[in-house]
Structures are given as structure tokens and as C-alpha cells.
Amino acid sequence: MRRPSPGRSARRACGHLASLLTLTPHTGPAPVAAVVWYGPADLATARGSYDPRSSTTPEALLLGGAPAARPGRARDASPLTHAHRGAPPFLLVHGEEDTMVACSHSRDLAARLEEVGAPVHLRTVPGADHGWYGVSAARVEDVFDQSLRFTRHVTRRGAGGG
Image (tube, rainbow, N blue to C red):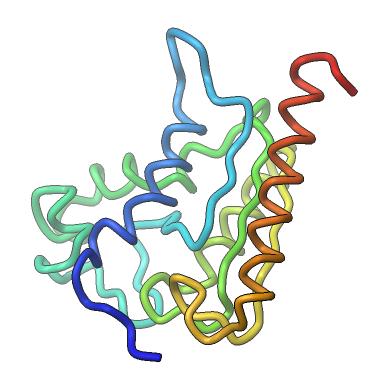
């Protein structure tokens, strides 16, 4: 199956923005949990085909220049930087063969969340590329079902329902 080319930036942004939203301070109601599929966690470090010296990446567009040329902004825009004790529960799911966002992003974010004592579950999916390309519909459905179970569990717990 050939991967569609439009929307590359948008596909990269969803998991990244969900992680940032969940990990940064809020003055009003805050997220109670995060389900993040193949999200970038560290904009400052070269991984796979990602080069932080490039000014043509979606990350560079977000930061107003190559991440390596804007290290403070890259650090501030990296969910890894914001991991803290008391963070809401995270479910991180990432394809092991992701060619757009290296699986190491989720592994590193999970390790950092564990290190600070925040609840996190990491699931890597063998053979899966970004957008779940390369795996069967049944495996994608399983990821979706796990995401729903996780969400139901944390929202019931947060509402006092068990």
C-alpha cells in the first residue's frame, strides 16, 4: 500500500500536540489522560531520517527555524521536557517501523514518565509504519480497542466509578 503524501505535517502534529497539552500546566480544567499514537516527543535530537538542522521539516515550521538553530524553542516544544510527577496517565502506542517519527520517541517519553513516577503504558506494534501502514486491519482495530479501554478506565476512575 502506498502512503498518501498530503498532510504530512498534520499527521505529525496530532500526537505531539496531545502530549504537550497533557503535560503543560493549565489554569482551567486539565486533561485527565492522554492516548498518543506515534507522537514526536523530542524535537532537538536527530532520530531516523529526522535532522534537527533542517529548516524544511514540519518541526522547523512550528519553531520558526531549524530546531538546532532554536534550541530553547525546540526544548520547550518537546513533550519529553515537560514530563513530571503528577502527570495524567499516558497510553503511548507506536509502530516499530515508523519512518516518519522514530519509535524511540515513544520509548523515551515512556521512560521519562516512568522515571518521574507518572503512570504510563507503552505499546509498540511490530511491522507498523506511521499511520499503521504495514499491519492488518485487525491489528489496527486492536490498537483502537486498547485505546478505548484505556480511556474508559481512566475516565471511570476519575469520575469515581471504579
